[in-house]
Image (tube, rainbow, N blue to C red; front, side, top):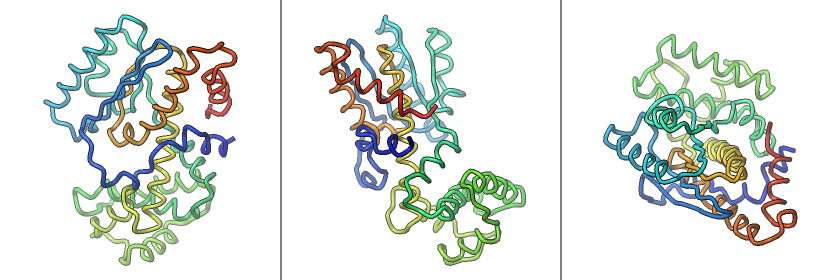
Amino acid sequence: MKKIFLNHAFGKKIRFPHKFANYKYKIPYVFKLSGNNQNVTFLGCEHLKNATNAKNKELENFVRKIIEKNKKKLFIVTEEEFVKSGFLPRLTKKYRIPIFSCDPSNKELISLVISLKKFKKEYILLWIFLNILNQFSKSNKLDNPSIIKAKNNIKTASKLLGINFSFKKLTTLFKKETGFEFCEKLNFKKIKELQDPFKTGSILNRVGSAINNTRDRIMFFCVVQKILSGHSGIVIFGHNHIYAQEPAYKTLFKELKRGASQNATRSPIFRISRRLFRILPR
C-alpha cells in the first residue's frame, strides 16, 4: 500500500528539493488551474516567522479578493501554522469557509520514508537529530533544556523508526558524519549544511531531500481529496512546497479537463478518483 502511494504517477511529478535548489522564482509563487467547472489558486508564500507584516497584509488582501469573487462553495487547504495564526483564521471565520491542514503526522511521514528502503534507519534518525539541532542555531549553543528536548524527540523518533538506538550511539554516528564531538558549543554552520535538503554533498542531504519530497507527496494527495470534491479552492503552503508540487497539480487538471468531456464512469478523473481514495493514507 505504501509502495503504491509513493510510486503513484502523480507523486512522481513532484520535484525533489535538491533538483530546484538553484532555480529562482518570484515569492509569493502563484498559479491558477481550472477544470471540471472549478478553479483552484495555489499560493506559495514565506512562512509566518519569516514574513513581514506588510507582506502578510498583501497576501491577506489577495486571498480576500479571491474569496469575495467566488460565489460558489470554497475550500482552503494550508499548513498547520497558517491555521493557528496569521490572517487565515480571521478570513475563514468571517466568510465561513472550511479550512484544512495538510501537515502529515511524524508517524505517517517516517513510515513512508522507511518504505522507500533507500536509507538506513540510523541515518534517518541522525538527519532528524541534525534538523532538531539546527533549530537551536540562533542561540549558537545548547543549554540543558535544549539538550533534554532533543533527547526526548530522538527517543520518540527511535520508536517510530522501530530501532533501539541509544543517544550515545547517535552521538558516535554524529561525530563520524560531522567530524566533531557533540558538545555544548557546536558547529551550527556545518550542521545546517549537512541537514539541508537543497544540497547534495552527503547522504544526510539526500535523506533530507527524500523526507521533504515524501512530505510534499502526502500534502499533494491531501489537497487532491478536496479538489475531487468538485469545489473551487485556495491552497496556501510555503513557497518551496507549492513549487515542488506544481507539476503534479498541472497533470491532475489535465485529467480533469479530459474527464469533463467524457462519460463520468469512463473518464480518466473517475479512475484517478477511485485509485486515489483506495491508496490514500487514512
